[in-house]
Image (cartoon, rainbow, N blue to C red; front, side, top):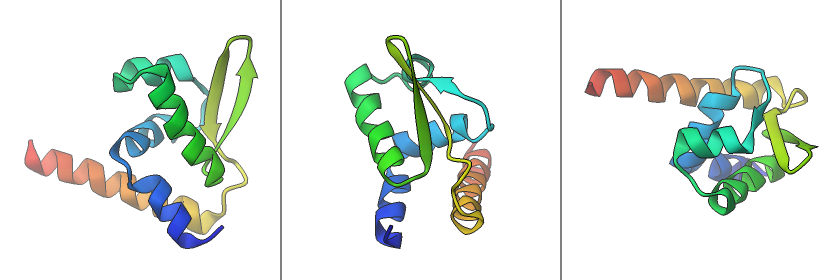
Length: 97
């Protein structure tokens, strides 16, 4: 995947907020992401599709819901970029508060 596609996928604030949740290495139901991020199902599904197409997350259908988690096959280099972005974002939020 081109780097531009990867960076575009993590550029959106809602997708980064979802990554903050998913980066704990556990599985999360789309219903949980919707509640935590105050997003509709269709909006959350679009964002998660973008992250999935970029190879950042994987999904698993569980009855009517879909569960997402960090892609364990994501390269160390790309994982490091996400780690750095999430850490910088948290640091900036602390400095503003």
